[in-house]
Image 1 (cartoon, rainbow, N blue to C red):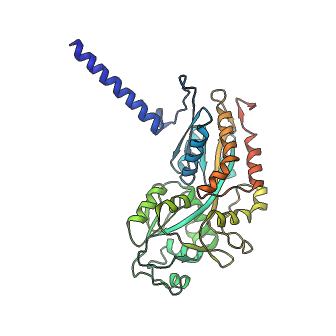
Image 2: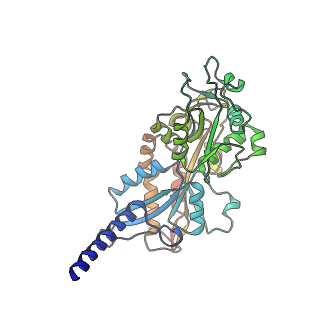
Image 3: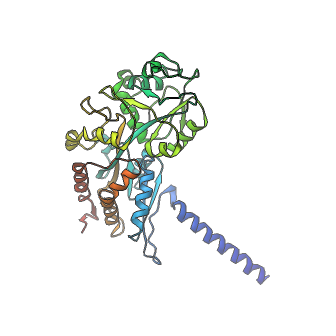
Length: 368
């Protein structure tokens, strides 16, 4: 009997260790799904929890991996969508969240003071699955809005043919996909549709969630990507880093200068630079659909923000960890951003972001 108990006890011990490893690898959560922060007494590694944007997830993963090589900290980031991250912020979960849609003054009401720090930018791409199309797809803003409003339902519609002269378009229906979760990518995409098409703005508007007139909702960028990849005739929108890995083609979108522009870090950077003056007054200013003077600019471009409670009431040093990690992202991490198809922030915005970092406090005191 004692022997059996020892074997059983050993089995439970192995299971417990396995569960701990699983929890660490996948992110650990306490009561009500709250992400917990860890402080390992054995390794000296501090854990910092964050959540939010799927748009920035590949970059966050790379930043965290590189930063952890020389710092005793583990960044536990959950890509649950900008909307999910904002909900975590409201509940006081984690140390920071990432969102491609900064909070407005109205949304900030009732919340503790929040610092919203731009850390990168990038294009939202229109992906499609049209095996018979031999040339890259071109879409004007008006046509794209018509597709997502379900006013254009066939790939041989005259509006699409007008944007693609000479192209042999497939005789098939358009299958729409969109994000079903609260998504900053959706916010950037619908902000563009609203700006170029007044009818869209009136009927459907813009935001993390909109009342889509049609289409298949998917939770997360990867799900949208898979839906488009698996079904011919489908169209969707995701960030460039995901699109490049997928091998799916991306559409060229017409800008105000009349150019059909392919999404890239360079073309998105031109859109961002066209808004430098407006951003100097308010970093939350949308940068979609830049003016006609911005030649070569990709029009569906947005910035990603890290939202941090201005004051941390947690353990001493927590806020310093967040500040130092983000300071890395705004310096050395900017070169990495370019490698992963994001936009390196212009110097003026980097300086504004660094100044915002200096506002963070710990238990009401400035961080040294």
